[in-house]
Image: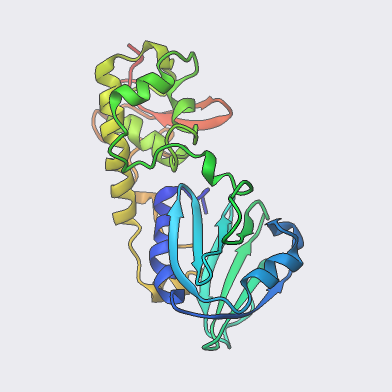
Amino acid sequence: MNLPELPEIETVRRVVGPQVTGCRIIGIEMNRDKIIGHPDPTGYIAGITGRTIVSADRRGKGLIFRLDDRGRFIIRFGMTGQLIVVPWDFPAEKHTHIVFRLEDGRQMWYIDTRVFGKSWYVPADEEDTHSGLEDLGLEPFDSRLTGPYLKGRLGHRGVTIKEALLDQSVVTGLGNIWSDELLFRGRICPETPCRELSDARWRTIAGLIPEVMEFGIEKNAITPEEYLEGKGRNYYDIDYLEAYGHEGRPCPRCGTPFRRSVIGGRSSCWCPRCQRHR
């Protein structure tokens, strides 16, 4: 499984959210204390137990479960986090670190093989200064996301556009997969420094961000039954992607083999003809 990005987290929200909204949490089993970012595990369990989930929202790559007392708990998936709702007799799954027991007998499991994910509980009378969600930039579907906004935030920088698109304080939700797809669609070389991009290029990027996010969300659509069968792992297939992971394969536009570069420590695949650095 690749590192979840906004379309993948939105898929989890759309599948898991309706299953737990309106459900009361009657107990929590904590199998890995380091998963909890705030407060300590005892305070986390005490704050959530007995509360009813009233909604499941998303901010960037994080899920926010809002409770009936206006508190909330947040889950960020890291590299390998999974969240599934299971019947009481579902076979145990290795690396299940948090078990939320629901009043109707079902359970919501947070599973994380590499344990890079985190969860936080924030009471109603407390600001969230812990999860990092307050520091995120615009959502991809925000009407304020325009070419001038991106140029104002990034146009003076010498870093590459690939690196800049991963800056969650500017636009949240993009990662390695969808930045490759976006730049391929826009015919923009990922190695281009931000300060070399024209106003037209910034407008193109601003228009493509919501477009590729919506495309990813639509492609990830899955039923709750399929999602559970895959145990929250196999809910998207990269075969429909045009650029990401396609090193050496022919470009679907011109046939030129895709090139792989390491940019800012991250792998990028791009077409050296269609995405020539101008």
